[in-house]
Amino acid sequence: MSRSSKKGPYVDERLVKKVRAGQGSKESPIKTWSRACQISPDFVGKYFQVHNGRIFIDVFATEDMVGHRLGEFSPTRTFRGHGEIVKRTMEKT
Image (cartoon, rainbow, N blue to C red):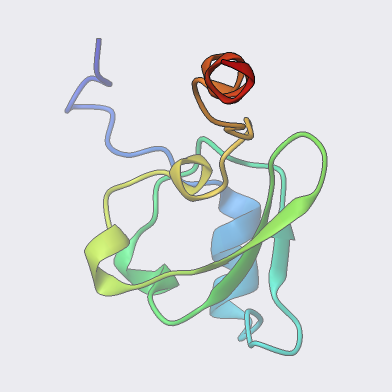
């Protein structure tokens, strides 16, 4: 279920303050644990480091990302691939 439209988008106030203060350059990205924060138009052109539970993933906010959440761009699970057991049994025969 999506968020009520009368509430408006969730944007972390601390991130907004940091963006308005001029932080978020490539040399000093904004480090955040707030994966649920929606990307607003103010964030476009800024660099973020979003925590994925283990490490921080670098995210550059573009115009296409507006309205999406920061957590969508830092995957939490690593995909190892399908069918490795099948490949091994095929090689043996």
